[in-house]
Image (cartoon, rainbow, N blue to C red; front, top):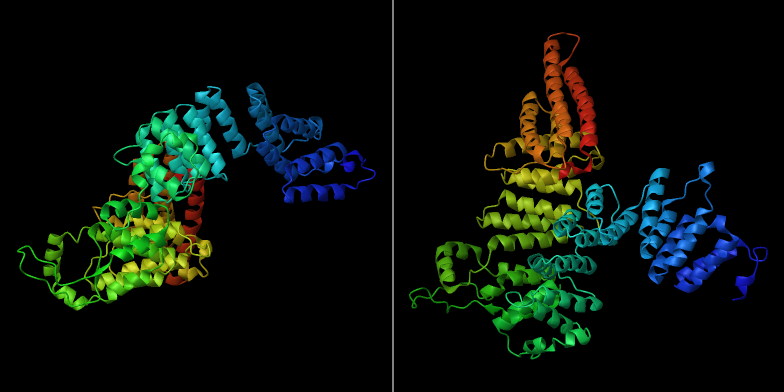
Length: 627
């Protein structure tokens, strides 16, 4: 510790900075704090903003708000307001977080006002930390007002920021606002976020919402942290949701046992509830394996689930009797296999998620399609009577296609659709909606998103099968296919525009399609129609756009003034396009204007006007126009 007593004349600043970085990288937090203190005394002006951020994390972990406040006060001396020097956000973050931890609420408000006066924009972290402090202080209206101002699109959100908003709304007694904010955030459920949501349910007596959260936990295979189980059990007990019909308490206790999580005193008091799970049966039974399969799939233990399915698979034999108890159905393929009806859906999921598509493929290959089709009616009747058809075929198709898309195997998706078509299974717009929806949310094994060309491949496949695009499909593909930066040449981009215009016209002709396209989609379609379409295209899209805009008037996230302005711009596009066409048609007979040249001029006029309108529309609606 001799270095602490050395002056700046003896130790060069570069050496101190290297010493600090070494302590940080070696994860020696106390030494890191000591070296920082030396830097404050001797080289205050050389401390970087990044270093302040690192010390903020260090002191938050150390729970030392007094030291944090001292660093804030020292750092503020570097900035002279009279010379126009303004402290950065990280410095205020140190002071505000210290004030919150020290329960100095007046100082929190003072520092926030000072930031606003000096034009320093608070980060999401500061805003959400202050929201929690305000909620604890009882300022419910202030918390709700702050929550309304938050933008999930224009800011970089982290899980901790989201959790603080949920916590503040829960403390403020606004559980519905907390749940709604989580839904809008569309972030993957994590153990910490789940506990925050469960705490909101507990504090505001929402047992039904808590059950829904726990169901989602199982659905996504979410494992809790060992330290979280006791608190989760306590919440389940206090909300009285541990018993039938879902038996949440028993599920949690069994999960703890299976994962070798130690039982502390809190859990031991409920040890009697473990009794039904202490014996491991040797034989396979539906009663034991049905909940076990669900747990394994929810826990993403697909290899174990697939092994259980293997133990149930049996070859199809000739012993399935018909309804009269005498007639037998002859299955010509000895290799065909069957599983119990209650296991059918889970078997498909287990094999597909465990990358054992070969087992599914073998089952398909071992089935003689011609013989099956020829005896289809008889097979269906016998299977229906035997109860072996107790599964949802549409769900199986969706799950298999989703598995192919997860591996980015578009060729297998197309092959699967070919197989369905050859088996006379109708392919519907909703199937393509599921495909496009999965593509927008999926990345491949290298973390890459599907490209616009991939989307165009599936779009063209849909048209080749004479499947009419729905408005829901258009909502998913327009943002991807209409992004000009993804297209190499203008001609290909023009073909995409024409495809989207024609797709909308087909969808608009379906009277049963009541889906309402977002305002932003109509702005894009109207722009494309004015650039490359006919007057009729513009009129058809304009009519649908106006109808949608009127439906949006009652939505809170669209102000009537903004929507009225957009309507004026859309009307202007329609009028300008019609007027331009009329003027150019009048010039068609003049020798000094060729039809090709006039057509090119029309495209340029419309493109300039439409882009101008689209830009203004985007400015008016901001980030909420896709809601």
